[in-house]
Amino acid sequence: MTDYSYKIEMSVRDYELDMQGIVNNSVYQQYLEHARHEFLLSIGVNFKAYADMGINLVVIRAELDYKQPLTSGDRFWVGVRLERESAARFAFYQDIFRCKDDRLMLRGKVIGTALNERGRPRIPEELAALLQGKNLRHE
Image (cartoon, rainbow, N blue to C red; front, side, top):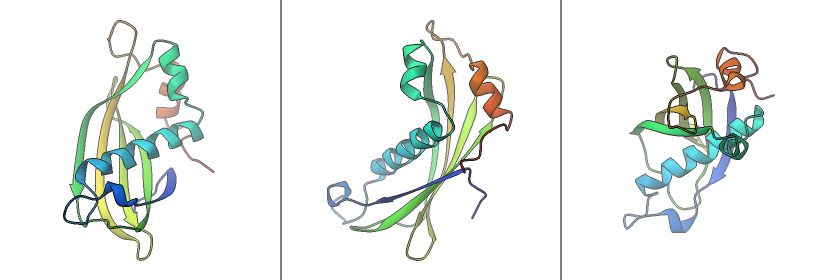
């Protein structure tokens, strides 16, 4: 397991399953998004407040490696780590583990950027400071 800045525990709900009785592949992206939003809130980044200021945090790429399926009633946790990728991009490294045995179920890398009101990449100063490694740990 990696050193995560944030962890959140969740449960599989029956309506998230596909015909094979496993979590539908698209649902994993919802789990990851929820974990990212909760992580950002934990470090003082309010997604809606940024949008209200004309700064839109957007996903531009998602790489997901499905290792094992989650099934009905499984409890799992998502680990999140945020890193700067370039001047205009940041990456969330996110993994999903089943709680009962800490087995890796999914490994993900989600790349994002911030767009200003004109749709141009612009990382706000507050977020840039966080990406420099300051205050990224949730205690």
